[in-house]
Length: 274
Ligand SMILES: [Zn+2]
Image (cartoon, rainbow, N blue to C red; front, side, top):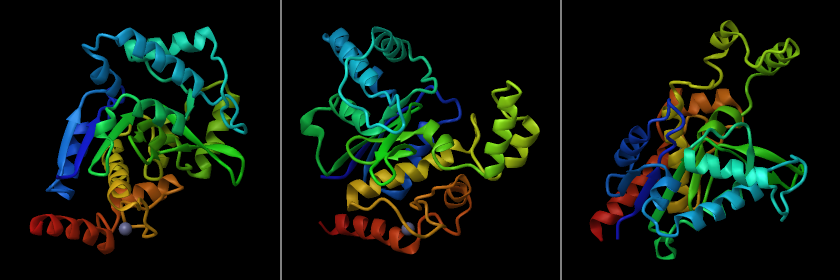
């Protein structure tokens, strides 16, 4: 049975092009079955007779997964009516996810419930692209951190997380504080242009190219139980800074380091012989 990978679109981020990610994965994994789908919730709920019930369950689930305090793990609580209503609007009308941060593992559980149990196996991986901000609680420093990717089933790549999670150059934060003090939300276009080579900015044309590497991390984790690489030139490099992320994804000496490229090579040779 070949490895299959189902990709679900984030249609709310104009600079994200799912088909290019799908083509890239097809090139890296010629034996795999790669399918590009529309947005996950729309795709799973369209035509479903219990659509209303599932929509309500998802809205409650997302409302419960909201991170209200970055220093406290999310605990079981009754969400407010307004929070559920917000999530319903977001899910039904595909509104923007405006600055709300969600617990990544709770969202993953919620999305997993949309898949058939029989689909869950080592030979199949759904990757869901979303504009939602996802964070996971780190026990070592007792706080939430924004994430680019949540590995597992389904894997989730946050397109907003690619812009927000890896740290930007210090100059960006200093400038942002200065502009906020003046009541402005965004930094000046001049400064944005200066920082362009060092971080992704909202509506960045390079987003799709960067997202390819994160999809590949999810695939490596599913296939080999190993998602990250120590080599700064490899697409699997676990970047903590925007500059490192851009280098590994756009300007690395190679696409994948020889070891990881070899792992994919072995995989396709194995399949040819079997
Ligand atoms: Zn590598």
